[in-house]
Image (tube, rainbow, N blue to C red):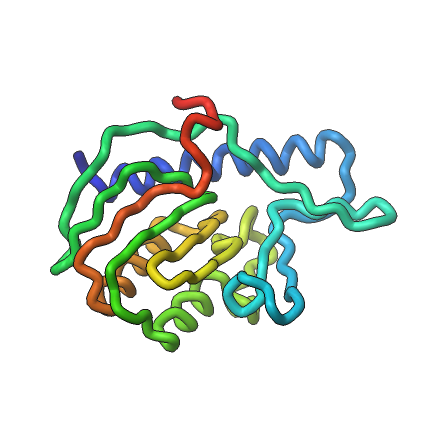
Length: 187
Protein backbone atom coordinates (compact mmCIF):
# COMPACT_ATOMS: atom_id res chain seq x y z
CA UNK A 1 0.00 0.00 0.00
CA UNK A 2 1.20 3.50 -0.82
CA UNK A 3 1.29 5.05 2.67
CA UNK A 4 1.74 8.62 1.40
CA UNK A 5 -1.36 8.23 -0.75
CA UNK A 6 -3.32 6.82 2.21
CA UNK A 7 -2.33 9.77 4.43
CA UNK A 8 -3.46 12.20 1.71
CA UNK A 9 -6.75 10.33 1.27
CA UNK A 10 -7.46 10.39 5.02
CA UNK A 11 -6.77 14.12 5.13
CA UNK A 12 -8.85 14.88 2.04
CA UNK A 13 -11.74 12.73 3.32
CA UNK A 14 -11.76 14.69 6.57
CA UNK A 15 -11.51 18.10 4.85
CA UNK A 16 -14.46 17.22 2.58
CA UNK A 17 -16.54 16.55 5.69
CA UNK A 18 -15.22 19.76 7.25
CA UNK A 19 -16.29 21.73 4.16
CA UNK A 20 -19.78 20.21 4.35
CA UNK A 21 -19.93 20.95 8.10
CA UNK A 22 -19.04 24.62 7.58
CA UNK A 23 -21.50 24.89 4.67
CA UNK A 24 -24.23 23.42 6.89
CA UNK A 25 -23.49 25.95 9.62
CA UNK A 26 -23.88 28.76 7.11
CA UNK A 27 -27.01 27.23 5.54
CA UNK A 28 -28.54 27.07 9.01
CA UNK A 29 -28.09 30.84 9.15
CA UNK A 30 -25.43 30.70 11.82
CA UNK A 31 -23.47 33.89 12.24
CA UNK A 32 -19.91 32.99 12.99
CA UNK A 33 -16.60 31.87 11.61
CA UNK A 34 -14.64 28.73 10.86
CA UNK A 35 -11.24 27.98 12.39
CA UNK A 36 -11.19 30.48 15.24
CA UNK A 37 -8.06 30.45 17.41
CA UNK A 38 -8.17 30.85 21.17
CA UNK A 39 -5.44 31.59 23.68
CA UNK A 40 -6.45 29.61 26.77
CA UNK A 41 -5.52 30.28 30.37
CA UNK A 42 -2.23 28.99 31.75
CA UNK A 43 -2.46 25.41 32.90
CA UNK A 44 -4.29 24.11 29.85
CA UNK A 45 -3.06 20.72 28.65
CA UNK A 46 -2.88 22.09 25.10
CA UNK A 47 0.51 23.02 23.69
CA UNK A 48 1.24 26.72 24.30
CA UNK A 49 -2.33 26.98 25.65
CA UNK A 50 -3.66 27.45 22.13
CA UNK A 51 -6.65 25.89 20.44
CA UNK A 52 -8.48 26.36 17.14
CA UNK A 53 -12.24 25.74 17.18
CA UNK A 54 -13.82 24.25 14.09
CA UNK A 55 -16.64 26.83 14.09
CA UNK A 56 -17.70 29.56 16.50
CA UNK A 57 -21.26 30.84 16.37
CA UNK A 58 -21.64 34.43 17.38
CA UNK A 59 -25.31 34.97 18.07
CA UNK A 60 -25.25 37.06 21.20
CA UNK A 61 -22.98 34.65 23.02
CA UNK A 62 -20.09 32.75 21.43
CA UNK A 63 -20.68 29.02 21.04
CA UNK A 64 -17.96 26.61 19.89
CA UNK A 65 -19.21 23.89 17.54
CA UNK A 66 -16.92 20.99 16.72
CA UNK A 67 -17.18 18.58 13.81
CA UNK A 68 -17.39 14.93 14.76
CA UNK A 69 -16.95 13.15 11.41
CA UNK A 70 -19.61 10.58 10.64
CA UNK A 71 -17.27 8.58 8.45
CA UNK A 72 -13.62 7.62 8.61
CA UNK A 73 -11.58 5.63 6.15
CA UNK A 74 -10.84 2.15 7.38
CA UNK A 75 -7.86 -0.01 6.46
CA UNK A 76 -5.85 -2.86 7.90
CA UNK A 77 -2.79 -2.18 10.03
CA UNK A 78 0.12 -0.77 8.07
CA UNK A 79 3.75 -1.17 8.99
CA UNK A 80 6.25 0.97 7.16
CA UNK A 81 9.71 2.41 7.55
CA UNK A 82 10.65 6.02 7.99
CA UNK A 83 14.42 6.28 8.18
CA UNK A 84 15.45 4.37 11.31
CA UNK A 85 11.89 4.52 12.64
CA UNK A 86 9.23 1.84 12.19
CA UNK A 87 5.78 3.43 12.27
CA UNK A 88 2.71 1.22 12.61
CA UNK A 89 -0.57 2.82 11.59
CA UNK A 90 -3.43 1.03 13.33
CA UNK A 91 -6.08 3.67 12.81
CA UNK A 92 -5.96 7.21 11.51
CA UNK A 93 -8.49 9.97 12.09
CA UNK A 94 -7.25 13.33 10.81
CA UNK A 95 -8.96 15.19 13.65
CA UNK A 96 -7.73 12.75 16.29
CA UNK A 97 -4.18 11.55 15.65
CA UNK A 98 -2.51 9.82 18.58
CA UNK A 99 1.17 8.94 18.18
CA UNK A 100 2.69 6.62 20.77
CA UNK A 101 6.50 6.68 20.60
CA UNK A 102 9.60 5.40 22.35
CA UNK A 103 11.73 8.56 22.15
CA UNK A 104 13.47 9.33 25.43
CA UNK A 105 12.81 13.05 25.22
CA UNK A 106 11.22 15.33 22.66
CA UNK A 107 13.12 18.46 21.67
CA UNK A 108 11.33 21.56 22.99
CA UNK A 109 12.61 23.70 20.10
CA UNK A 110 11.54 21.09 17.54
CA UNK A 111 8.03 20.93 18.99
CA UNK A 112 7.81 24.72 19.09
CA UNK A 113 8.98 24.94 15.49
CA UNK A 114 6.45 22.35 14.34
CA UNK A 115 3.70 24.19 16.20
CA UNK A 116 4.70 27.59 14.79
CA UNK A 117 4.64 26.14 11.30
CA UNK A 118 1.46 24.09 11.51
CA UNK A 119 -0.69 25.98 14.03
CA UNK A 120 0.66 29.34 12.87
CA UNK A 121 -0.12 31.19 16.13
CA UNK A 122 1.08 34.54 14.73
CA UNK A 123 -0.97 33.95 11.55
CA UNK A 124 2.05 34.57 9.34
CA UNK A 125 0.56 32.33 6.63
CA UNK A 126 -2.99 33.64 6.94
CA UNK A 127 -4.60 34.06 3.53
CA UNK A 128 -7.87 35.96 3.62
CA UNK A 129 -8.87 34.56 0.21
CA UNK A 130 -8.31 30.90 1.17
CA UNK A 131 -11.28 28.72 2.07
CA UNK A 132 -9.45 27.29 5.09
CA UNK A 133 -6.27 28.16 6.95
CA UNK A 134 -4.48 24.78 6.48
CA UNK A 135 -3.53 24.62 10.15
CA UNK A 136 -3.67 22.07 12.95
CA UNK A 137 -6.36 22.73 15.53
CA UNK A 138 -4.68 21.40 18.67
CA UNK A 139 -1.62 19.65 20.04
CA UNK A 140 -1.11 17.86 23.35
CA UNK A 141 2.19 16.36 24.48
CA UNK A 142 2.46 13.57 27.04
CA UNK A 143 5.48 11.57 28.19
CA UNK A 144 5.31 8.93 25.46
CA UNK A 145 2.57 10.23 23.18
CA UNK A 146 1.50 13.17 21.07
CA UNK A 147 -2.12 13.92 20.33
CA UNK A 148 -3.14 16.27 17.53
CA UNK A 149 -6.22 17.46 15.73
CA UNK A 150 -4.61 18.06 12.35
CA UNK A 151 -7.54 20.23 11.30
CA UNK A 152 -7.17 21.46 7.73
CA UNK A 153 -3.37 21.11 7.68
CA UNK A 154 -1.73 19.51 4.67
CA UNK A 155 -0.41 15.91 4.90
CA UNK A 156 3.09 17.34 5.44
CA UNK A 157 2.05 18.19 9.02
CA UNK A 158 1.77 14.44 9.72
CA UNK A 159 5.07 13.63 8.00
CA UNK A 160 6.84 16.53 9.76
CA UNK A 161 5.67 15.16 13.13
CA UNK A 162 7.01 11.69 12.24
CA UNK A 163 10.31 13.32 11.26
CA UNK A 164 10.41 15.19 14.57
CA UNK A 165 9.93 11.91 16.44
CA UNK A 166 12.53 10.13 14.31
CA UNK A 167 15.02 12.96 14.91
CA UNK A 168 14.33 12.61 18.66
CA UNK A 169 15.44 8.98 18.47
CA UNK A 170 12.10 7.19 18.25
CA UNK A 171 12.51 3.76 16.73
CA UNK A 172 8.87 2.72 17.19
CA UNK A 173 5.81 4.87 16.53
CA UNK A 174 2.25 3.59 16.74
CA UNK A 175 -0.44 5.75 15.14
CA UNK A 176 -3.98 5.41 16.40
CA UNK A 177 -6.82 7.61 17.66
CA UNK A 178 -8.05 8.48 21.13
CA UNK A 179 -11.68 7.89 20.04
CA UNK A 180 -12.67 4.30 19.37
CA UNK A 181 -13.03 3.63 15.65
CA UNK A 182 -16.36 1.87 16.33
CA UNK A 183 -17.89 5.24 17.30
CA UNK A 184 -18.17 6.30 13.68
CA UNK A 185 -19.42 4.75 10.50
CA UNK A 186 -16.67 3.34 8.30
CA UNK A 187 -16.40 4.22 4.63
